[in-house]
Image (cartoon, rainbow, N blue to C red):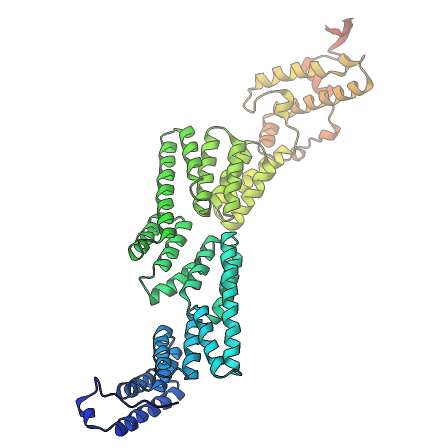
Length: 493
């Protein structure tokens, strides 16, 4: 490589007295010292000495090349790129200069420019193995960019993240690739990872509008809408034409306003309006998973107030599908299950809640649901007698009298064997129900879900006729006699 003569422009006045030869020797001395520091990996000092050499001989391509190599080790790729470009301007046959320029372009994500540099190397030295490999790396990056673009259009964000990770293997300093990856991580709900990438970029460049947008996007999707808007506004201040930041800012403000309107209507007891407002809010941004989960849960609360329990359960299920960690949605759905007597489902939800948050309150809710489930699997004596759970003693007696007479076997003696069997079963159940509900102690145990067998009452051996006789009094009590087809009357003894 031909060495250009040194130029004394901007040189120390004392140096102006030196001849070109002396300047070159002095510059070479600085370069050698720079090389020594480079070998020791003291890149900061190496940079200083290469700079001194350049100051003395600013037209020497190799000095720029050396300083570029040092800047690359310091990860200052844009500065290194400028030195490489100056080096090849001074000497277009400087192979190392072209290689380093291409490498800087590659690291910064400009695969097309990198490829042109490596092709120039191959023109100068067709068997240069490094250039051959780097051309392949550049081609790979271009292919990953193409695949990522298709993936983003198809909303296949996992594919985009995969492609950007592969591209960043060779383009580790490319902010564009990092931002695209971070945006897709946010869209996938992987907020800590997305924030980490964006924050790394902002530490290096606090005015990077794309990174500000991604930070805002993460906050927005984590339902920190006010903070998110601040980042979107800041991004738009840095880049007024940032379409994504403008759209996200508009959605964030609209979502917040509509949700607050719904909350206000709910507090005022205007449940129909609240339901409508929450429904409208849900259409603003399908990507905002956490906020939408809360909106579904809010609408479920409205549904429960309107006694639309199945709709409330459906909304809770949608909220949980969006956010499987959303305890409030599990609790709301469990209560709806309790209200609709779907006790197994309620127990399942309360178990999930208690496994996540082992509080006394959640333990009690689980215990209550398990008790109701246990009670639901027994015979419902209130239902058998046709009375409310708060029925008085007199109401229970009256109901027994009616049901016992209705299902007494003698009344159905002329019916088919199948009907007789069914009526006999019902008669026995009516006796069981009265035996339990007319006894204060047994009724209390039954109401609290305790086992009646602990009182020595074996329902399997229960004789309903004894209850019937005791209730109506006297041996024989009365008999059913026919007064015509299907008609009976009671004859008391």
